[in-house]
Image (tube, rainbow, N blue to C red; front, side):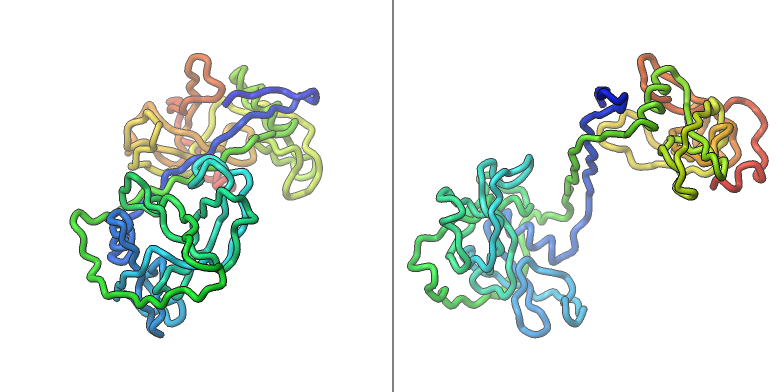
Amino acid sequence: MTTGASATGALSAPLVVEFPFTRSLGPVQSAFLTGLRERTVLGVTAADGRTLVPPVEYDPVTAQELRTLVEVEPTGTVTTWTWNPAPRRGQPLARPFAWVLVRLDGADSALLHALDAPGGPASVRTGMRVRIRWAAERHGAITDIACFEPLDAGPADEDPPTAQPRPHDGEFADPVTGITAPARLDYTYTPGRAQSRFLAALRDRRTLGERCPACRKVYVPPRGACPTCGVATDEQVELGPAGTVTTFCVVNIKAKGLDIEVPYVYGHIALDGAGLALHGRIAGIPYEEVRMGLRVEPVWTEDSRYPDHYRPTGEPDADYESYKELL
């Protein structure tokens, strides 16, 4: 993260939070996404006879498990819409488009997706007929529908053709059994004066907290005010550098882009003098030997802005009574 300081001394930097969530699919969602790969749109029949697209695994009214799959048409009717004048990274189209809810022919519920409308918002209306534009390459995801596009077939207020859903067994060769859904948030982070001082001290390999003048609790990272007493915390306190492991967990799943072999340990560490614990990776010791009360110290790598990890100091373990309030 590259930071820049304002005239007030507060830092500011672009920040990206990204987490690719991987999930397995049940039989209904597996059939739906595999069907999209094969240019087939599947829905599911609810207890009251309605056809739901996209399909769900449990009836939204009765909570009954649903398994009866049907095929619907790739054409449909816009039920409502909104215009998106400035598409963001990762959205279906790079040019302005409409988000639409489309009730596909044969379905009783609507599917949310993008509508490519070169004519602008004036060309979009509720009741207009549209069809699916399939992606050139399909892999078994909702993005296999590249977008919807207008269907030039009669006036906008014309009743859509009657279409009945057709039974489908949901069987496809090489079914999709799991998906990875990337979640990403891009924003500019301005930490404020208190945390800017904290980050500046980290450059000098020092850890600063701030003490509440009322309850005397030392916060790290500092927040500029005590959340309990509601008063400003102007007194700066240098902490550590050593601390005590209060709680920890063993990580067994390797994170994307993180060059650390699993398993490894992440823990809450109460630096000496702090009124609450911060988190950090614990290394320099077999993961099964990490324990509550372990005394640790920070390890800095060359040109790092914060400790790379914490390692045992070799001191005797801290007594539980000394950190129990920091759990």
